Length: 591
Image (tube, rainbow, N blue to C red; front, side):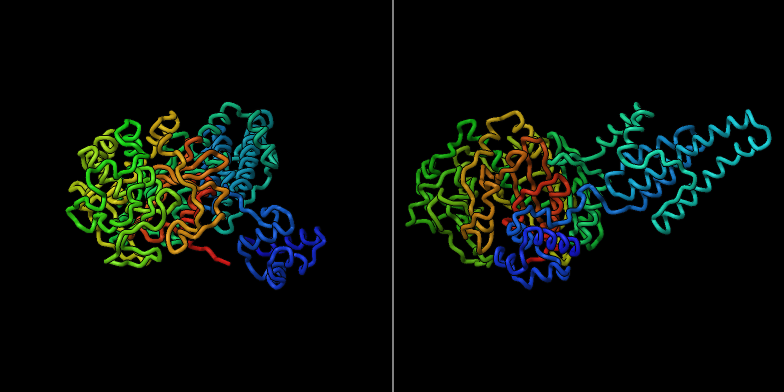
């Protein structure tokens, strides 16, 4: 954010309204001192402050901000060298110098203004050289003496100029092409004239350029090279140790890549097929299973779970006693809890009985109902466990068996399971603390719908792609999954403020389906799911009406600090409620 530009914009709009600094302060609640410092360019104001000032001046926030071009990437020297160097081959292949210059310019012009400027200069020079060569050939045939000298001097001249510009680029990132005819002075002219001169080639080049780019929600694109470079930079800046990502477009995978380390201490590179602890991604898969059972009439989403048992829920016996619900005895509200409530986090249970809302671990914690079931949202793994046990009771099958039959095997998710498998050994990545310390691998000895799943990026991407495809086909299963069940009006999703009422995110229409969070956007509804465990932080969001989405998996406690920027970078998702989810950016500066 450029302080001086914001300062000039604020002064301009304030005076345009006829406001004094005192009047603007009175209107917005921003102190006079703060306004003075902003107008002097002494501070970098927080976005919320800018919003207050914009509201007070009755203008758009963008009128004060200097927005960066979302397509512009950081300058990469390799591309400048390629643009200036490759046309040299055209000295041996007729017209290749012009064609390759045009292709590279089309491919990179939107990524950085320098690429655009250099590209036009190169094209102008290559056209000039080609014309000179043609004229020199005519001179060779028609003019004695100097015609021959003219002919043999064109190629050495062009070679010297091109080599000199490569050196100039290396030293100063500038270029100078003497004698170049300014055939194309601007983007519009060059596009028009290229279309006239090289119609067929231009069509092919544009198609190739489109195919190599990633289409985003707002219609913009980003090249895969640019995206890869920016992800690497984000990870470096935020100290994210390893990351795997998949991007979907038109219900197909358009980008999938692994970055960083599987183990930062041994410097083992993270590979796409390395296993991740899936954490709460487990819940999204469970939601798909529950929707299947509901569609087939095996499970009634709105029937109290108590009605599936011959004994009261508190009396159900468990091999591990601490898994039971005996502590609910005396609070008959458990009799109201349904499968829909369990999947939409409205049972009234805390997330975990042994973890307080403030995040404090209490080994002797007791399970209780905090509010009347079905009346409000509060994220709860305990509720999913209750439903898991009911489904196992109804079907006579364990969770792993059901998931294997209905999801993992049909989708060829061969490296995914709710239980640790021997085949996963030596094929997984380690979690890392914020400081990069390795977290020992914890393997689940019992299947848990809320969060025991092990998976890989390719496996989980196949699952998400299946959900996108079913939604496109208007499947009853995804209709059940994405049916809004409970409105969400809380300040945060987790922590001490997770039950505090707030209308801050009402414009997103936050709601919950079967294991998936829901929001509204100009591109239709979005369905999201997080995953969070020691050393592992994940996020996924899909916009089924567009066929677009992204899955992010990290093996780092710093992973969530780049989610906000990564979502905007990859698919232009500016709708994920990052504050509500506590995805605070690594470079965030609060008020």
